[in-house]
Length: 95
Image 1 (cartoon, rainbow, N blue to C red):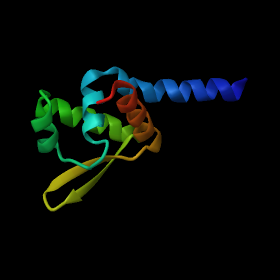
Image 2 (cartoon, helix red, strand yellow; image 1 turned 180 degrees about the vertical axis):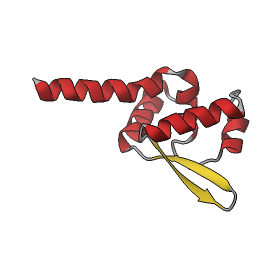
Image 3 (cartoon, rainbow, N blue to C red; image 1 turned 90 degrees about the vertical axis):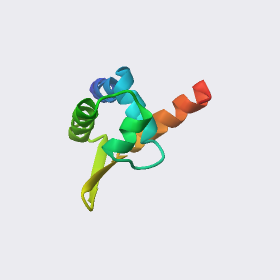
């Protein structure tokens, strides 16, 4: 029973990123390739400061990883479960 409760807590924490529409949009844009803040801004209506906050938080949650290339920082999804969940959502919603 304790293992099941642990798994439920883990899933609940992961799903928090999917419950915020802006964070979900960012994750969907990062699904198949890494992007920098400017690229994410062009695909969303989210401000630069808000995007940076979301990226920072998801990095702390071990959902994202980043790599500095020249003067830019590129973000990518580091958690395979997130990639699987986005794939499943894309399949369900056909987008």
